[in-house]
Length: 407
Image (cartoon, one colour):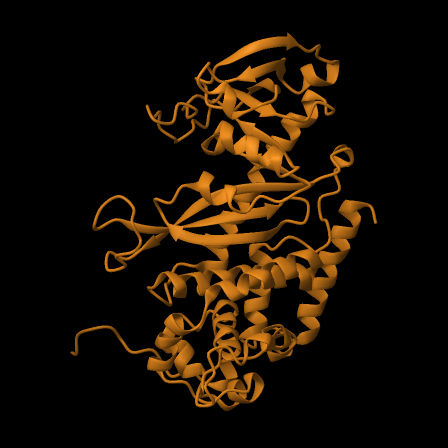
């Protein structure tokens, strides 16, 4: 009996459906058609992007070789306007085309999304509620640029700005896993945003730059943070009900650090009551003193917003969890498990295309992307679901969104 992995059956046109939606996407990529063209290119940037997008919506495409096989099918060639691509051309594309050309498209699509979060308590914010965080993308030991722990443990890092009310990514950058998240954020600060940040971003010079950019912040402080107390603000019954223990006006830092942040800020102490039957798996670390394994713990939140109640400040930080939910959707459901490219530029193209796919799902359905909707789209692109069944699913989602938001 022959050994080795059983070869997969060849891909057929009947396995690829749903080109109605792909045709809507193709005009978005037309601006990239002539990138790196010298009148002899057969695989253009827009065609390469369309093939990557097809990979995300059809589970039968699991590798670059599968994409190459799909490019030989007449329906794919006719719809995407391509000729059959070789494996060498697809592999070369990761080095030829500039991934950063896609960044403005992500921002453009995010601007088209409508707010999904209608919490009336956010009406007084008057700024774009933006969560910022990073997540690791595991890399192969052969990807020498992806510096992380050691020679055998390598990774890249996705730095993401996330619009909480729209539930969409706004800006993304891929770096090595060891890149400094605070430095990346300093380079991309914008006006009229309220940045919601975890303790890894609690650098006072970063907070000063956020204020200089005419934005505001709500950031978690480390448990060993020090400050000089200026005044203690009174708590309302609503604050106390929300678990607020103290609302302080302070100058952050010791004598050598107070110059990094030029204005006083508020420090709000919040008691978080957890479920003792479900202990937290995170370990206590000497380097990250804000971690704890206890179910009940205290949060220290710093903000420059003097006009908002302590209850609202705590609520804003609660919304930071939405970016963690997006990372879970992005890595576990949408799928970046298989690397189509091993270069930094190639991986960036793949991740940007995944973010574009997520944005398209939000724009098509009018709601947050989820596993059930993604499965229905995959069924449709595989030919298992009809146009009518997909339309009925989307209509049901849109009706649920309208009911939730009271529209």
